[in-house]
Every structure is written in structure tokens, then in C-alpha cells.
Image (cartoon, rainbow, N blue to C red; front, top):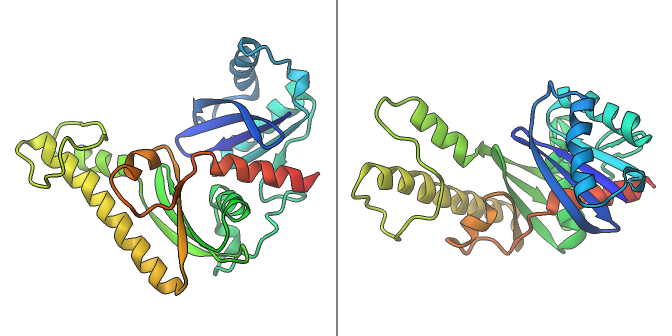
Length: 257
């Protein structure tokens, strides 16, 4: 089995693969101070609950946008599973794709593995939208080359900034608006309309501009926790693929042998 560990700014996702199929997944809050031993106590209990022996895990791959978290996860792999973890973007797990931007080394591992997973699954030019702590829009051409993208504040970051910098606005949860009206009748509705429909308009506008610049038909693939929520209120996505990042990591692990 392959254990893929995807470290984001907010959460760390552990996914257990049999071949290309995800058998189990677990999530824990990102904390760079968490030690390998602490990860092990948590993970071993989950494996036990599912009836999985730790010796069944033969390979581990890590993708991280939080560099400080890497060492402790490598300790977890070595000490508790007896394997040297593969790290996305570091030999022998090079991305194996052209990164056609001004500073290729600045490309986040999450965006790179998204591009790899998307190109493997969907033909033609692609725009990958990933809803995370930030929302990213990435252009991948029909040859699989990464051509650049956009970084925007995630919707929860936007909401946190709004609430945190105003004295009277309440904290609200991101959800589907109760109606399609964009004229709110109370403070909470007005906030939800501004954040939710404002975000939909931002996505649709940026994707339209990206498609125009690409100059060829481009499929839009959405991933990340809020992709399904937004998919219910826009026609802009051609596919919603919540496991895109993890599947890209599995492809990288296969290539590394």
C-alpha cells in the first residue's frame, strides 16, 4: 500500500492507496510543531480501527506547502514504517513536466501535483481551480506543461478578514444562500451574498479571462473542499474532482518506482 500525505496550510490529509484507488483517508489540523511520535499515536489508532497492519504500508509520499512540517513526517515514515519517504518535487520524485514560469522553483507542490493529476485524467488544455486556504487557478496546456496561474484569497480567509476588521459584523458560516436574490434583507444575508456570490463572480470572471488568453478550448477542473458547494451555483466547471491532489501524488510515486 501507498500512504500519501498532503500537507496544506490548514489541514494534513493522509490517504491510503491500493493501486490507484483510495481505500481510506484521514485529516488532521496542520501544526508544524507536531512531532513524528504524535503523528504516529494518532495514525496508528486509525489504522487499527480499520484493521490495517502498519507493515502493509510499503511506500510513503509527502507533498507539502509547509516546509517546517516535512522533517517530522519523514521521521514518522522512517521510525514507524521503516521506509524513506518520497517527497514531491525532490529527486527521485521530480515532477517530470515543463514548468513554464519565471520562477519554476516557487511553484507549490500542491499545484504541481494537481497539474500532474489533471493532465493524466483529462485531455486538452486545462484550468485547475483548487479551493484551499488560498484559491488557486492553474493553466496546464495540452502537452502537460504548467503555464502559470492566479492566487486569490480563499473564501474563508476573505470572510475572516471582513469579520476581524469590523466592529459589529457577526461571524457567519459559508453555505449556499437561501435564495438567488442579491439584495439582502438583514446583515447576515448581506454578508453571505457579498462573500458567496462575490466569489462566484470572481471565479467566473477570472476563468473567462484565462480562457481568452489561452486561446483554445480549456476544460475547468475544480478540486478542494468547497468545490462541490460552488458547483451547485455555477456552470463554469467541467468536472469536480475532490481527489485530484492525492491522485497526482500517487502518479508521482508510481513514476519514482
